[in-house]
Image (cartoon, rainbow, N blue to C red; front, side, top):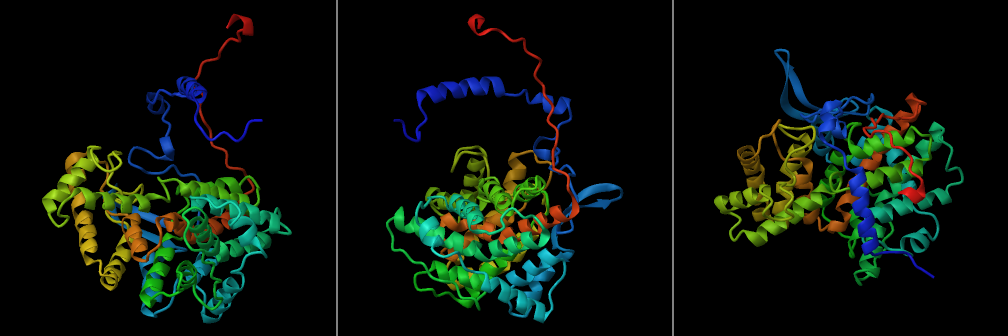
Length: 453
């Protein structure tokens, strides 16, 4: 009796070569037929595929009839992200719950609405009976995003009305998922840390009266303790990652899958699969790993010439993962600046001071200033390059003592809000399935009988 195959055998290698031979496309055909690879043109501008009121990303403006790069901006339901964060920061409040309300319902809550909504999220921040034991602990995964996806799909089985896509039912499901994503993520990590890494197991219950950010730190740490600054900065990180227009890969996935009429759990699991990819949600892990490699390879990281040489070696595929990339620099949309990185930067410095990591902060600041210069010297680029939100978020998470395994799940804890808003928008506004076209470029083949092949 054969078991589940977990190895690539010579037979599989041979079949792979056949697959490559008959599936490889002539890339010049994309230009011939004016196909936008990745649904983007040569300047990175996306193909217009839908309409949304959830958020807006702006990186260019019209000047004398020409579209030119400008300071990047991000707005949630028409409110600039800098204004939103300034609002709750100045009033010394947590922002996650307030901005969640805004993204879902299109307006900022008043005090009574915010209090009631925060209570609603807090009351729903619990898992089905024995779910942690029977689902999360039974088959721990070294990749927490996969564990998160499995948990989401399994929750379908615990829902008495999982396939009803009426708006009240979908909103109920989305609010449940927003509330419990922190639990699924942290508990998934704790299971991995115990069963795979052999460390002590901690399962702390959340507290209804605490914010989402506070509960994450409380559940993660053995002593359940955290500082006010740590919780506030994690809260800001969650707000900045909540939403980013309808065209990013995971949000577009949410629209595509929702348009088929499937259930909420399947749609969100699909979005999680997209976010897991290192080209999307895993970028901040690459940033942290790149800096770790830099510290090993560069004797004095305060020597600008030595750091500049390392950056050039990165671009020449001679350092780190030899992909030719400086991680955390550049973005598919932004060129002059990423507004999320700008909001982050001031708080990163405060946290670095509290944590005694100002030397690291100075290195990050140096790279932020120097990398665009090096890239411009070494490469022909069609638009400007600046630090993106991933450049600083990985550093922030490391200072918060979040393990690398939780970096992308923290992205998911935030982005489930945006996915939920877009799922609701898709169901409210259209009943058409999203179905783009692919052009076949293979000539017809004549069938040959088996004994003549």
